[in-house]
Image 1 (cartoon, rainbow, N blue to C red):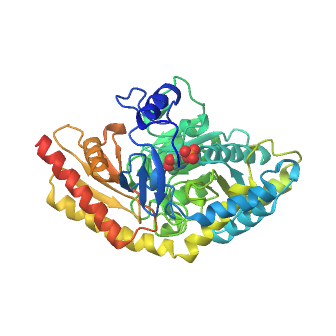
Image 2: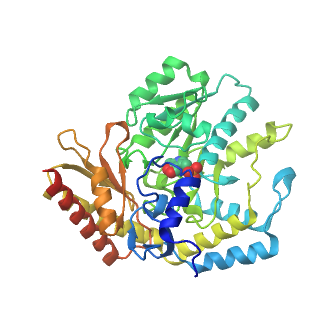
Length: 432
Ligand code: PLP
């Protein structure tokens, strides 16, 4: 493709006109990468540099880059019907068929989907639907949403207000009321909080099955079973945020399958289209759906213009077909075990790596070195060497996280680990 601007000119234009999401405002040289192409686990930038996308970009490109089938489906759907409304009961075929497919895939009786355009909207929708549910049930004091420390639920005002990573909440000096937090693994703390606040004031508890942006924290065995029991005991709705963990990421289609727990509501986004289109949603249980139908006299006054977007839903259907056809969930489980084993080898070799953990293709190494942060340096060195991974330093942590495409091969995974080790050695040489 002929280019109208040089790389340097594009960088200057970027700095001048593009306020980047979740990025430092000040940069010396503008964007770290200007990507132009993707193929499988690889991304290529404008200078021709090839890197392994060890994060599936934002934990979302589950099937890998460059799957042209999705573009074909998107074009076909756009040519036929690019958009039509889903308000006022209007519908379209891809939305109906995707909702049906999701009901088949989701655990338990999560059979009905409210569509959104992404994870933050899905979580906000879940809080609003949960609170509306309690209004319909006549329990109007149930408004509060309990979330966990180190959780990440997105950046819409409700999603941020439920985000346990304090830095995100402190970005503004006012957040939404009626959001509470508990220690991320303490069952007793949850029980105490419910008792102190009064169960009759709590609408829902929200949790990621594996905390992602907070540093890949995998809950202890039985944690979610006990959470489910507490929610049942106090009549609190349990919402799971499977925005990262859904669609095969952890080696099961949805991560809650590892724990045999069925929530009342489940939020999803990212992997539903592998990032090829903007789509998310919240699934609700058959029971809640039935109660909505029986108790609601009016209209669900909650809906996004793009709820049930025909093109995005068509892409979602094709993406799920690829996940199934290519056995990507099973691959995530096998490659995930290899990734974790590789990270544990590094932990045994480098004393400043104090933990290596993960579930499926979601993994991290935790670092502790004399109060110095090493994770950001490792990430910088890895990028130079051809691997994109991400550091988590919020809440006084020093962690490098990984989340490669579910399509990654054994050889590509070995390359990922080799580059990571070189980056670690480089930082070791600089710092120690
Ligand atoms: N929930 C979780 C667990 C996430 O990791 C994210 C994004 O990373 C979100 C919600 C927000 O999703 P989005 O950025 O699509 O709004």
